[in-house]
Length: 489
Ligand code: GLN
Image (cartoon, rainbow, N blue to C red; front, side, top):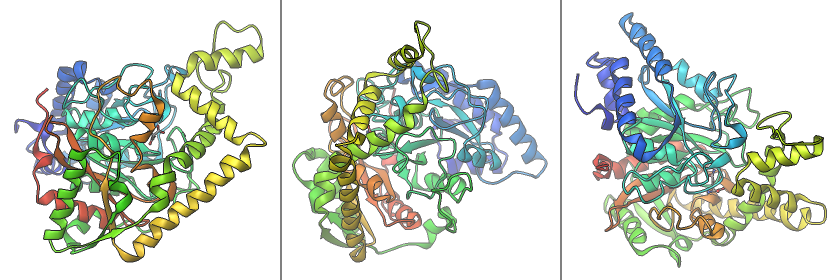
């Protein structure tokens, strides 16, 4: 069996499985052993079910032996953010509210993974109900950044990004409402893709803000992300917001699409607030594309930069207050044992079940939807949202994609922003507008700070242009070796 399986790309592991140089059981054992060795420090996982993963791995090996392998991902472990349902496994959203909940069914993405022979591997930590940018809002424990255990891994899909960076999983699924796949990917030096709104079914994803949420892949390389995206994308009759569009073979398209491209640089994304080292690395990446023959144009997204955060925290909290109303201790979730009557039961169950950030969002969301404020806040935010989308669509008349930072800084210290919600919210200033506009975006590693912390490049595309986005990202990755570096732990 080849050594060092844990840092191989999913494409390399798929080739080893196919050549029968490694079995799925050996592969899953390697990730279990690694997780047991390092997760005491990284804490990327809320839980994992060793016996279940090994049983699925033997079933995969049996299929392969019988010549019935289902494709490249057959036998491949895929970490799952603890907000996506896997039948028979815990589904906690890293909340006390759902601490004892076991999912009775599979999310559509989980079913698609299983149909492809992939093995859901573990429940990955996150900010409670996906609200946060550091994974410190988990009700169970924070996750640490594998590159510097004193730093946050980003969030809310911090467990997913950290697990890949630490060699605990080759691939993972996260969810992105305002940056939760791309920002942790950038902080941990992995690839993270937020698909176009509607490309991937959200059936079985615990809802945070339904007009913004998307499930997407986290991976070691662009090619691996392409493989995973191809497996989970596509129309689903169980999600009425999922779109009917042909799904290309994203992995094959990487080879077919070679540029040169016309690439836009939004000037507002390079202003004050952007850390100099992060800005420098992103500008160097832009220089790479220029030298590769791409035409680089400055574009302007005036509203996206100025209003995205404000608009997002109205719309996202409004939708969250509605989505989280079901956790009342009666229909769902933690039920207080202290209650004296029905109203008291609602109060106490929520008071005990939800953490402070979730409560803050519910209060804010209820306020912006209340009569008297609904038109002033919620309706106005929806109008500005349309204008933000128009900004992007105007830019895409001129260019194929946009190049931008992912987050204004590299990973920050644990605790540094936890008492300042506004500072925390600002870490999504470059990612949030894509969710408001429904656009796809990918974060890829583009360097390190002098202190050794990863930096990400964000590439933003027009709706349903994931194939082009992946090809542009792949071209950069081919010319750099950031993805071959691993934290020492
Ligand atoms: N950090 C943002 C928030 O706290 C985005 C989270 C997400 O994308 N789920 O809402």
